[in-house]
Image (cartoon, rainbow, N blue to C red; front, side, top):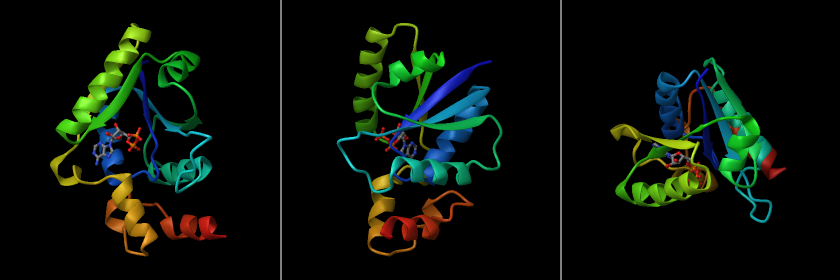
Length: 160
Ligand code: ADP
């Protein structure tokens, strides 16, 4: 079974991430979405909420798992016995940053490879940062979030 890890902050998971995930499922039998967090840096949504959002987004998809991790992605790959990492590419800037990370990972873990999936044109401008800005200012980010995500519920939880 070919399994890949799709790591990211996913703060929150967007339609752009969902599109990359759907493409990854064409290439791999199973995709594990890994929510990376840094205990020193607080995100907008806590990692457990990011996971709940992703679970709602992927409810209709088979062969997707979600987990949280901190530390190096290659260490997570080794812990889970996975040899493929998925990253999405939106712009040439993404490519420049991502190729450096992929090369460093390859040097440290030659048996683990990175597969880049280009953003579809429609979603290439969408980022979690833009979605967060809309949410912070009480705008409607619905069209940038995958179907089934009850963002209002998670925002209310966050403000408690
Ligand atoms: P990170 O902080 O690790 O970059 P993100 O959650 O911002 O985490 O992104 C996770 C992955 O998804 C990255 O590879 C990023 O380039 C990709 N990505 C983010 N938004 C999009 C999009 N709209 N289309 C395609 N890929 C995307």
